[in-house]
View 1: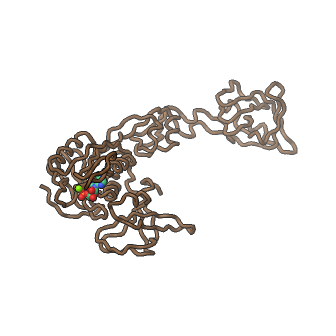
View 2: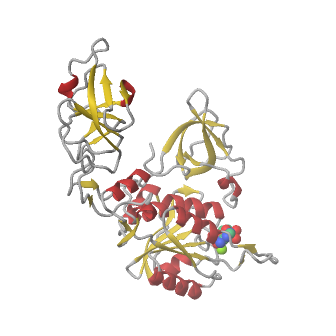
View 3: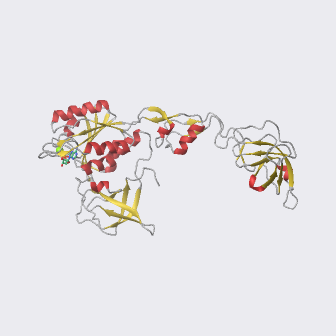
Length: 420
Ligand code: AMP
Ligand code: MG
């Protein structure tokens, strides 16, 4: 039986949790579906990109030597022997005294070594014989030519395992021959709500009852963290029902999260239930809201979180403890939300010994500084305050009072980890 009443720091809790993280298997998904996910293997190109030297401008391809002495006063005129656009190849060689009219993306014809952009040229004719182009200045070798292999060569790594796939990354995969991308499978996150008082959203609660909101907010949190939520039936406050629901969910999911029944109340069984089917690592974390947060490994395999029941406490617990694990399982290396340093506007009368994660909004001021405003009511029963917040304002543990004008760290849950 687990009996530790020790309250550990968020950092120690995360160390214990993240040490248990195993990346999910690799799956292949259509490249557009891979957006924002982590590429799980190095990707190489099957061809050189660009595959051939090509023009970066609409203009005229020619031999630079032919117009080396051109000036506005003494222009040089060349015969235009062809017109080519992207997708066409000039089959002949550009001879001295001639030029090929060429459009962006078209291969540089053999014999030519420079392109003069069309705005700098005057010409006669419409592509038929006898067309001429006049140049009023020189053009150096290679000018307006995109060299073959500028992006990469065949066999070269274009994306390394661990990189987050951007929209341009999707394009890079396409141009290098990848229709699908290898990514870590979305972890399946089982969500169990504990509480005899809970009824479903479609039911008007009777005396003593409330609607189960946590299963939905936690499912949404799981989805936001890149996981696939699986909502399990609500379980009443009954030890053996909880233990069997826990085992069942853990056998079907990669991670399981429950809410409610997590503290020391008369009907709070989750820690003992987790202990009966697994190994409990901790039960209390030095944070407010959400002190009662059980973490366990069930049946030697599945990470399990017994989050606090109060809606804001459950969501904050998920944000701080569960989300980093889910990201690590998908190969992300950035596990911390960006922090904005801000000046607190307003304060709190109450002084806490635990580290407070207060719901608030941080906003950039016209002078470039940041101001953080706290939600008026910090009750952990409230969802609205969290809904309107964009950050958690950190007030350090140990009886620090939140006062107007103090500098604070704001954990930006409106910004993805790794954003600078
Ligand atoms: P507990 O952790 O079980 O003591 O619950 C703390 C508070 O959160 C109580 O007021 C519960 O009614 C409430 N609560 C627990 N589970 C849920 C849930 N799934 N949805 C909404 N409120 C909940
Ligand atoms: Mg309860």
